[in-house]
Amino acid sequence: MSAPDRAALWRVMEARRDHRHFRPDPVPPELLARVLDAFRVAPSVGLSQPWQVTVIRDPARRAQVHASFVQVRAQERLSFSGERRALYDTLKLEGILDAPLGLLVSLDPPDGPTLGTGGLSGMLEASVACAVTLAWLAATAEGLGLGWLSLVDGQDLRERLDLPPGRPLAYLCLGWPALSLDAPLLEKSGWARRRPLRVYDTDVTP
Image (tube, rainbow, N blue to C red; front, top):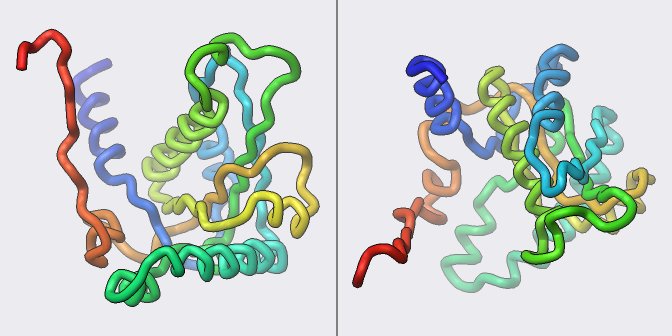
């Protein structure tokens, strides 16, 4: 990889943000296709590609996703108290109704045993997360905003949306960002800050 290519890759990685604010402008089909193509090249345990993606455009269906989010958020806020809950209540945690597209990524493993899953657990789910990350970088490179929504109930979504088989793991809001973020939104809101990487080198004597 050339030096300009390496620099471009790092610019994309550092520019990636979890977006919650979107413009209503539609996403051209060719841009959506390029974002989805990231799933084609994504790594997966045993080359299993254990995912499927459902594109959700219809505002009524996105409203159903939002209704599921409202229920889950109401439960999660009870995990916090005092000032932390008050700050939680001010956070914008989704852009479901604003973003013109939703991508529901579900775990859909192949039939039978999968190579590489006999040791560490959760490798199929980790593969889905890797694919989502590549799609996130692809969206960033195309100038799009993407937000990963986890505050939904997978079974509830399956019932509300009559989804194909598969276990929902990620709902991605995709569209043109309405805000330019030079830092993570949760950092700007005062909820959390990035921490230094903790590295333990077993070849170094304490």
